Amino acid sequence: MSDSFHLGLPFLEAAQAQKHVTVNEALRRLDALLHLSVVSRTLAVPPAEPEEGARYIVAADAEDAWEGHDGEVAALIDGAWMFFAAKAGWQAYDEAAGALLLHDGTGWTLPASGASGAATAFTLVEGEHEVGAGATSDTPFVIPDRAIVLGVTGVVIEAITGASAWQLGVADDPMRYGNGIGAMLHATVTGVSGTPVAYYGATPLRLTAEGGDFTGGRVRLAIHCLELSGPGA
Image (cartoon, rainbow, N blue to C red; front, top):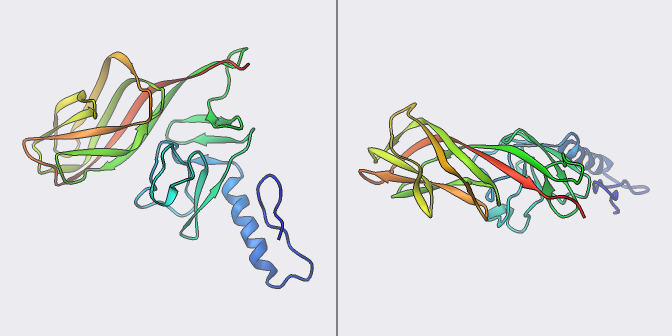
């Protein structure tokens, strides 16, 4: 059975039985890709409890059910992940960052704003993180590759247990965005970069326990950063 060229929608064949199966499959794909809006583009592993119909752009070095689908659109349809390889000209709205993305045939970029195609965009990467048991806990969402981070903010939405306080940073600098942060419900952190920090690779945030290992809790974090895209040839 042949598919359409651009969206891969299955065609009906002459005298085909069970035509509704093919039609419904085409409608599911069309529903997933039309007016494309993704929850996030910073996750490399599927979320623990995704909503039916949710769409994501898979981040680099993907794992688990997303392994091998870096940069593709992942859509949860009927409880299973379907993947769509984007083509040049596709656009997607990144809900977490509040930014419009454009696929240039190689990867997702920020739309050009300069005459030469260069652009500077403010990006906000937001996510909730369930604190895992242990001395440290890394977020599944990441600082984008080559982003310049201005700071990280956050709030405890389920009291952190096991530790009396915690640090917020990255593996190379666990206290970069704060230490002695409260573990109680609604405790907040505003970690401002003394000097904007550039990251040369997608980097998770790291929570480090103080006064004992983590046993549970949940936080909501926001990464405030700048992303640059260069001029065209």
